[in-house]
Structure formats: structure tokens, C-alpha cells
Length: 164
Image 1 (tube, rainbow, N blue to C red):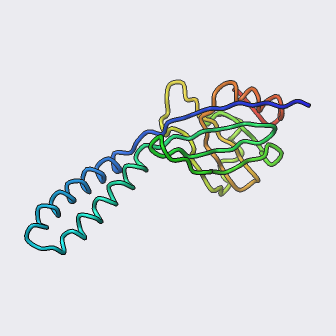
Image 2 (image 1 turned 120 degrees about the horizontal axis):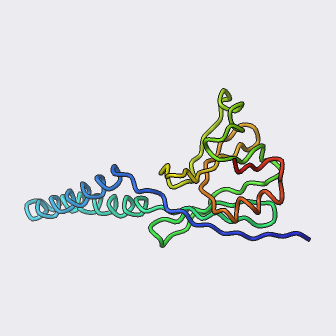
Image 3 (image 1 turned 30 degrees about the horizontal axis):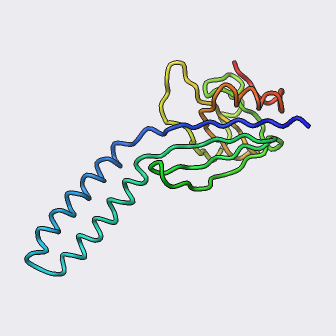
């Protein structure tokens, strides 16, 4: 049997909006705490702002873990380096094409209405390391895999995976 195992971890660029929201909620919690000396109902505001700041800080630092095992790609979301959420699983048999994001192989897919899911860092580097997978004919998934993962995918589906 030809089994492959490749693992890749990609950190998503934190959005400035999430950082600003986290700072705003912390400041709001402090203001409610100071106002709670005047009115006991302000403790509800302290609790709400504190809980909101906690969940915002969880979602501010996100990493994606790609795992390729035996013709299947699974994507997990790691929140704040402490909490793991199970993501999606993709089978290579249902994959139509896997190519770099600026590849000419994707030109005939530009006019199709596809649901876009982004599991990359969100940064277009030089050179751009992001790849696009057209999955089941109706989804466009953006990855940022390692070179070893792309080679493992090409060994399983050589007519669907391109390096350009």
C-alpha cells in the first residue's frame, strides 16, 4: 500500500478589527467596573464585556493545521494555541484541480460561481505560496501547503495537481 502522511501548520494573519475589538471590550470592562461602585447592576456589564473580550482573544489568534493521510486532507482550526476545532475533510477523488492561486490552469474556473473558503494565512507573499483547490465542482478552497504536501498530493493525483 502507498500511504503518505504530511502535516503542515499555517498561522493566519490577525485582523486589525479583532485586535481593536479586544482592546475596546477590555476598556469597556474597566469602565463598567469603575461604574459598578455607583450601581450594582454594572457588574452585569463587567461580566458581559469580560466574556466578550475572552472570546475575541480566542478568535484573534488562529492557526490552520493541514493533515494529509492516505488520499484525504483534513483541516483543523487551532484557536489561541490552546483550543482545537475539527474542520473539514477533503477526499482527493472529489478534487478537480489543485494549483497555485495565480496559475493559468485556473483560468477556465474564473467564470464559475463557487463558494470560497480560505484556510490560508491571508498574506500574499513573494512568491505567493497559496494554492487553490476546486472541490466537487462547487467549492474553491484556498490553502497554503508545504512543498512536501503538494508533492504527496501530486503522487496520488498527478493529472489534477500542478506546480506551475
